[in-house]
Length: 228
Image 1 (cartoon, rainbow, N blue to C red):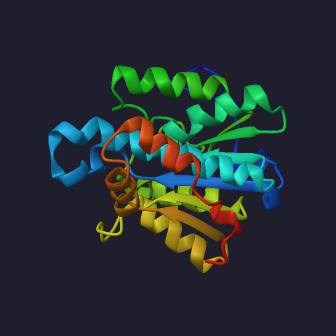
Image 2 (cartoon, one colour):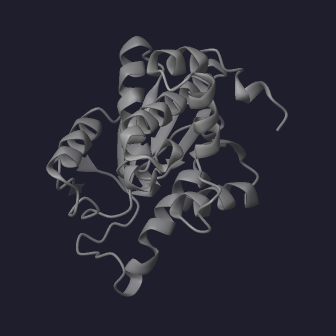
Image 3 (cartoon, helix red, strand yellow):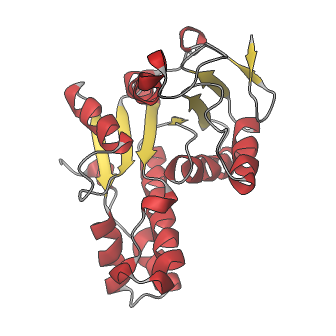
């Protein structure tokens, strides 16, 4: 059996990963470096990232309120790990909540910073199921068969879910997040997404006050009740 190069925990194959698709949701979204700060001003970089995290957490809460119990994270930096860290908190309060970590290949964290690897290790140690979509321990991204490593991970997450939560910036013409969402639409999954424009609008309405941003996000209508 393979083991993680970060946490040294066992990593199973996709064929061994079994969970109920009808109660499973996957999460996709951009990395932190792709988040353009409010008004494109560096002084708002931290505020914008915090607002994105709060929106992401609210969407996860909405999904849990509507019966989703298994959550798949792709273990990338930014959205994936933020979501996973929040789901770990929810697991402590609700034993029915489960976290699946889906890595594209064993060496996917080779270029993570020390802080990112520390967070990844925490997440892996709290996963109920840790999967490597590619089982070749020598796989390297963008060489030979490695060109499709991230696509295969994205498709695996969608194939094993009935819904997708996405932090999707409509201004980006192509990204792994858009690839995941488009595949979700093609395969008939329920897609619930929010964009940077949605985050900016909340910041506007809250006068760039993080406490007010948090309150306004907490009172958002459950998107899983909406017909679109």
